[in-house]
View 1 (spheres, one colour):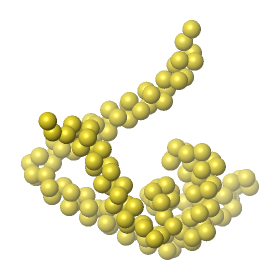
View 2 (tube, one colour):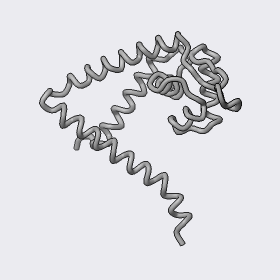
View 3 (cartoon, one colour):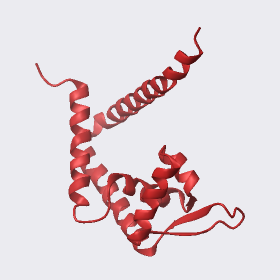
Length: 154
């Protein structure tokens, strides 16, 4: 019997993770640090609190990620203009250039991967992927809510 759909999805995830590890080998970048850079590239400068919320990590975690990125000249912090307790995190010019390259490579890889699917099948393929993402999002959210429900049930 062949691999299940879940096995195939896990294989795809593993391949993406290995490719990312290969791409950033020898650099100070990790998947978590790249996620911070990607978020800043897509949404612009941000407070650390907003970054933590966008990435669903703790304030301590985002602080450590930003510290490492700042130490390696990928981001810099500036005082928030109206909240003296907050700082604004912004990509450095070097990081902006890196992220623009990553976006181009991301788009090219998407095109290359979709070329493996017959053009007539692409709309169905994309609907299927969207449906799987939506269902997995629902399952993860329900699982996250489950401890709260257990605590409120008599």
